[in-house]
Image 1 (cartoon, rainbow, N blue to C red):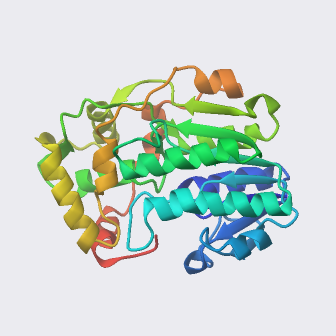
Image 2: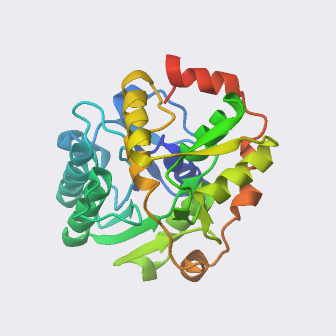
Image 3: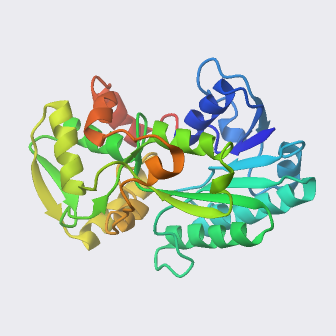
Length: 312
């Protein structure tokens, strides 16, 4: 039995679909507020309503599970759901419950620049979670994917929404020269699923990325060409962008820009180009070839949903 946390999330839905297609028995930990949120069509799994803050529920979810795929986490803080409380303490709670019930392995999705000493709270929480996993006694694999993109993601969908909804110009945080190595979400899901059958990944932290280094400007140009729109880039200084993000976090149910995004857009996240091929035996998709999902989306509805709410 495999327990997947964050199963209804952007990455989690793809991972659950792959696991069930491969014949694995899967149990999904889903926050009560999202219990009715749909998993991929045709997927049949056991769902446990619970939260990383509730160790007792975690013990129930982990019964008979020998492997945990830990994808749950937050990218924006709201009230008591801080990075430290969810990304770090939630991981500690999960490890405590996993050890109590006798699970043997954990696969964790982190971030390339995670560091317990980082000045950024998100990266610090991920770094602390990594350290806890490495020292807990379970067999572990930590994956550090660069920017992950795909249908219904945060970054490319919001970029496309702004390109289609705001005329003439597009605001770019900083100088647009930060480098990423975009990894298609389906390729990340494949890597996670292949970890299960690849013992060579145990005990390792693996940085993963797509087949090319792209700056923010490069990604914007590719998305604009895909959507057949043209906007003049307007470069916005980081302090001003951060102030705008703080305002959006206060007034928008699903902000187009968050303070965490502003922080991460200033940090290069790249690794060796052949990492996915070397570790998992396949070549990841090129960004320009995979972003076709951005075409023919209901952009007006998506844009309005940022202000009036909608399914998260």
